[in-house]
Image (cartoon, rainbow, N blue to C red; front, top):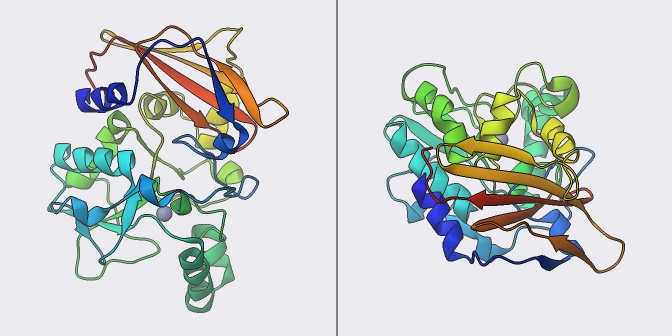
Length: 278
Ligand SMILES: [Zn+2]
């Protein structure tokens, strides 16, 4: 995981007091919440996507899939750490709106409305359109495209156990259906970045609950704090101002990340210390 931190540092880590963030950025970043109430507002920019084939060790169900760059790099590291490269196939990753429309329409015909509503998001309500979601399946002769098997044993289980260390969460868990409106999907992982993944796991939140939770930590109030070894992270929420941009205060730190929540503001993740033990 040291690599992830180094990569962020290269993007610029000078201590800044305030930055101007355009309103459009509410709808961008690793922490955007996509669901029925919060549909896609801005399609991901082409230059933020990378073909999965750029890492030839990763198996993909069909050619031509792509994913958001950081998410793909972390997926690749996670697959290697889980020794899952030989056992796991990427079934679906980034989808355009048109692809999501096609999948939805096809599933309606093949699987019916009840099944489709449980497992397939409507166009513009699928986080696959962000490039941050990936469906993974255990390699077998017949991998199901909508609901691939991803069992809790072998390399798949190791993948599940290590996912949070690489910034991934299982997005749709059992017991959260009343909030997510999607049935449990053991195969669907969403990149949110570390340590958000670890916090979501520790609190047993779904992403909807976590985004609400973080809103309780504002710049002027308490910050959400995370510690792992010498790595310390501060997380806080800044509501978007009315107008074309928002002045976002940044605490003194070694590096920070900013993400919109796809609703009403920004989440700042400020890192202190570059050591990261995963
Ligand atoms: Zn999925």
